[in-house]
Image (cartoon, rainbow, N blue to C red):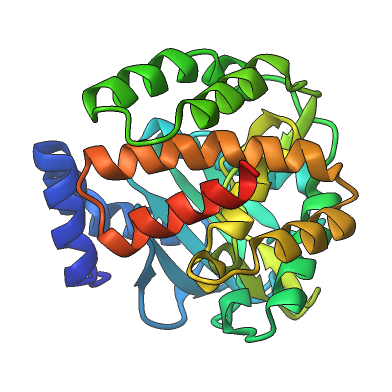
Length: 292
């Protein structure tokens, strides 16, 4: 019987309410069922992220592995589809899956992450190289960025009005124009690429985890790269964008426009939800750089 980390249980119950508490109560039994079905034995303590737990396991016919079990949320549905499409190319391998349980048997990596690398250019360059390698033809059935972005303009204008228009009009105009004009290729995109979502590996130096699995422009991920805590409070946004785009083989202007769209949306959301001042101010400084 696994021990669910208390901090994870508290955060999940607070965020998800009764549904979260019900899932947490079932989680040890789910883990036992998966261990038996996948013929695995526990191989270390449970760790966790924001929406799931990871149980290190051993199986005789596999390298080091881990079972990931996520809260059943729509944002987690296509994670195994992305891993299957990459088949170990720049990301951890998927060995098995149980979509009904939102569970996967994955190649184990870490515990070190790219966030441990202190050289910003090196870390951002790794993210760019991974973005390039992960940009494969998208499999059928994944959500399209085109469809997600379709509602952002009305959402951002409404949020801006509710907040008393905290951002310059030219910034909103530039963001809405970008949403209308940017292309949406049929490419698999990680969707949440940043240094904490890249683990040190044995098979490859760095392996991506926690993909959203969406179809669109790889330049979409430029925002999460330069919005990371390592860069948000620095003056290195322009430099980091250039390093990322060069390594990823992405057009810099396209990446800048995508980053502006997402920064504007993030800044408005942060204000509406009382995010910490450092985050609001850092995002708005990023907007100033991207909007120049």
